[in-house]
Image 1 (cartoon, rainbow, N blue to C red):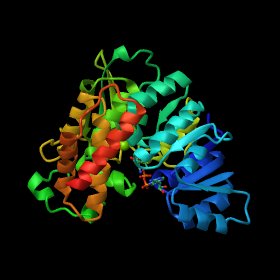
Image 2 (image 1 turned 90 degrees about the vertical axis):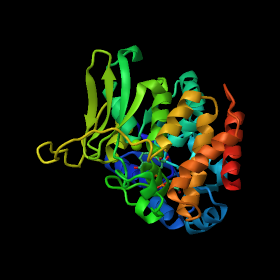
Image 3 (image 1 turned 30 degrees about the horizontal axis):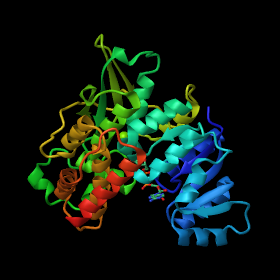
Length: 380
Ligand code: NAD
Ligand code: MG
């Protein structure tokens, strides 16, 4: 059970919902971090009184320090600030709710301090999953997924003592706002269309990833790393209602799933209370009124990111780090309206064709792959 948290990315979608759960469970908040949103950070600090607040952006940190001069909260900035946040001695649990591979170094630092990791930042496991998981095993740090699909799998695996009993993991996927569109129709879609997700309200990057289905691709790799399974044992299925959050298929054919209304506060709460559960103020799912639950095959021709991710999961080495970094850059370019929707997958494929994969990579190899992939996308 968590008592005190360090929350990396407190101003984001997961960060704000984490603070709602912290309020509800009466957790102490030792650290808050964000990139540049000073107003919201100031309000959060005044409510939760953390010992440390970190702004990635140095100007934002200077502004926050000025505004908080009447409080006891220390303000730091930049990558060193983020590392100090991840290793703060008061926190037993670090919530990684930053977006992108910037989460890698702080996650590793927190693992080395044997913190419980409530992991939302999937890009970290995608770019360096084998390294992160082996460090967690070596240091005895628990990694509890916050991503709803992986939390559902984690919950459905309780009582399973041996992964040999699992035939496959089945990740559900809402299909995003462009479900049913052809590749040609997708040429025309704009950022504002993509930012309208049917079931979940999330940060901009993951919302675009959900529209391209790269989010499901990233999640396939995240599941492979969390549960040490080959890509052939992780599948995705379209489930438009986002009620079944994912399933485990056991070798005797039993399928165990977790169901609920789409609400990230459930997996966040569970990451704090595991192995117990706490009462939730939200009304439970009503099976009588929730309507029919449907399942179908994803269209990998219209949404090639799923295929690309599966191939990178199979290739291993730095392939997933290259794919992830290229995708981060391509999504940002799409949000800035510099490229079209279908160019996102093209840019990722381009980076994968330009940057050589290294096998059994060190952390330096992964960081180098990340840098080269970003450069390859920008050069195109
Ligand atoms: P968001 O964009 O809403 O928030 C991101 C947070 O990270 C903000 O606090 C921002 O200030 C901070 N941040 C951004 N860039 C940073 C940088 N370079 N350095 C330091 N801090 C930075 O994102 P989100 O939707 O909350 O997602 C956070 C993570 O959780 C992502 O990895 C996402 O894939 C994952 N996730 C989100 C959801 C969801 O429902 N939002 C669900 C599952 C997984
Ligand atoms: Mg998810």
